[in-house]
Length: 378
Image 1 (cartoon, rainbow, N blue to C red):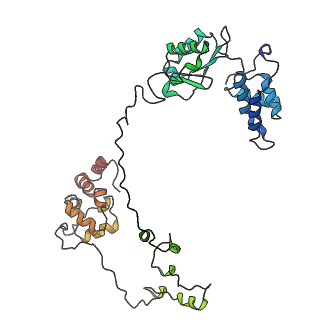
Image 2: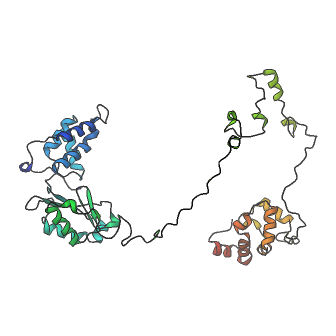
Image 3: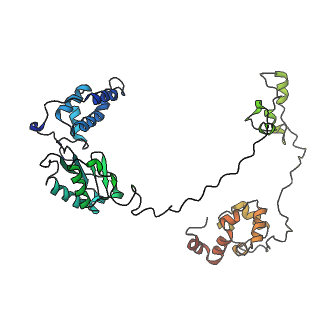
């Protein structure tokens, strides 16, 4: 970072004071911070002083230090560290900050700098003859998509050419800077593509109105008593309001501790066989869509190489007479659906594409699988 010093004494004003409005603003800003922490307001106050006078003077630094009960050197350190503070007089009508970082430089920032040298002053931080204009080169201003660009005080002017910058300088020098449109100087809105949108540019379809919901009757709208509103419906004994607890009835609660179950540990009789629920929805082994099985070969294929097949699933497939990749790859859609239903996979065979995996493994083993799927089989 370059050394930043205050302006020479011969250009420093004798004193500084905030205007009435700015003084009230400064007091309110200081009051935002806890007592003893007023120093946190140093940057806002220095910025307001710069906005008032155009640059940060030595008198302004000392005045802010007195307001915040800070040593002069501490405020001077802040003012000289942050390049946002102008330590030299700037143009009364415009101080042009030209971005010179890589994107802007590649897009013509040098041409803009040459315009500033020609129209304002050959050197940065120098006023023009009338004292209305000045310029400097700065680092990235955050509008790289709209390079090259400049900033004048708080406004940015983007997508510039040398000719456009000359026009902007002329308008500010004439005191008509407010008439210059800020932002991009070409046919674009902010950072949108030049010339207009290239996507999402179709007219929006007429919004379809959702069908009106039929109003429920009073009886339908209150399906549960108000006292049970938002409570889950369940048949679990634990939620039975009649259930006695030690807090309400010790004797009755003792009966609740006699649990029942399938084993003695659960309170039941292990010798009494409990009824087993019949499997629901499992296809018959005699179904015509069951894939044909074969006798177990001497060396079955390792079906676990198919993603989605583990040791347990491989054992079930063996029980069905499925031992090779060729068998799996040859399954027709109906056969794949039968196996999927038998294994209760709910579409997993199609999602994992067993047929394609098995075909690759049957054709060329692991090498072919890697070629097709770009990874090793599991």
